[in-house]
Length: 269
Image (cartoon, rainbow, N blue to C red; front, side):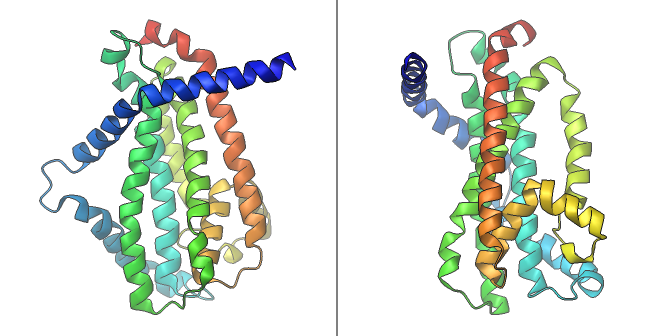
């Protein structure tokens, strides 16, 4: 009983602390987005143009080899590219988020996680802009939409939670081990090729296919999103609960590791 009360009290304190610093949270998000497009002539329009250009190039390159058996390859490709780019970009921004706020952390009290949270959220905002490119391609290719399209926030939210947990984990690790940023670059590249972004998972050997469909969380989120947009995949409830489980577990790991090490940050900043 006492543990339950203590947990509720801590949760209430964390919520109150976040609400106190919510203006800083939104200012950090605004700063990150403005910095990303600073001195850019087209500005936020690049959020739409960049995935469109990437989709066109990759469709031309891979469609002849990998599009067999894939319904509407451009949309299939763009969904995978958008979701993976969000995760990769969110974690890349999150890794140096705590060290980037060192000047403020050394002067005044600020919840340390707010820097990581704002970094991941700013990347989410950018991805939401990029969904405009997906909608344009869906209309251009004549994808028949159903009520399942209304459920696409689900994989986005699950992926956001997963990316936040991963970002928290790497952000606290980066404070102590600065090589994390370089290792993440190598790891994310390997992860991209092990995720069915521009190829159908059915073309892989059975053993590799089993590993990807069982242990790769990105497979769940991308497959769920594709199922809601393109249809034809009755396994989407399985993707949904597996994705939710992976997101919850990753957030727990990130939160626990971040909480345990945050009091040591100031010694290494």
